[in-house]
Image (cartoon, rainbow, N blue to C red):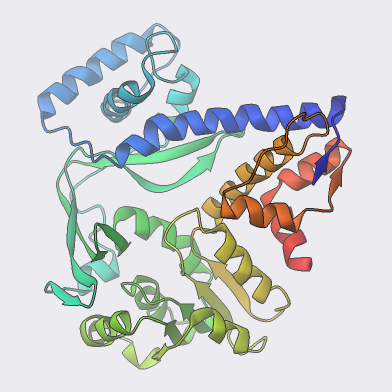
Length: 375
């Protein structure tokens, strides 16, 4: 890629850089610290801190509900430890904090009691190879993301964070120190939109804990589900511990095979929906793009990708970095170590950007995916 610097291209790129910088700051002091599992055990202290939060901000033109003050006190405690108090005694600008708190939630007892999977599926702890089917707990007043971030009108990515007012126990599959598959409040909310698109004959790539397959099987407009999973231990766990509890198990077929290899073998229209869940986080840019390319010629079969929105946000960040590194006024060449950066650099090695419109087009992740798939 070659990025020709002029007034219009630089203005478009700088606007994206400024927004991305704030998004990184938000993620760095809100999302990243939550991975350390902060638990606010002293409920009375939380409520006292909430009142202090209300008083601190009441004179600044912002009014928050009681629940927003409680979540605000917790989030600001976490964020301040990471970011200090750079913004008038706060770790983030108050307008950003207000956006965060409008998306925050306190989940009451029974908030997910109507979820069919949680209601119906019950497991005893068991281990297959390196995988253990067990339960984990989201503790009372432990801030966590409950859904993917949303875009504000200013373009900021606003995390959706919440806490339970009780301990919330949910099933998961643990491998080593990680739980790559679970049915937490986050997983339930992330899957909802994907499940709405399931219909007819459905191909599921990766079985995991079976949440998507179970919920899709309950839909009247889903006639059959084929699950392809390459790991025999996961297949055995699914067939012996999970599938027997499905009410609509007759809709399910399980195949132990390489998922992308199987995907390459199908014809357009063989399935109505392909659901790909071969990754667990937003860093899986390369496998996501490879799957998108395989399915790019499909007209009848619709591809649904797990965490697609989050992965596309990652692509957007990489494209900003790619343009910055390939400005024509750069005096030094920098080596590329990151595999995703190398992949995208290669995809756009012959691209020359000279206008603001081109800059915006190549910062649009949906358009970037379309261009890569058309190659």
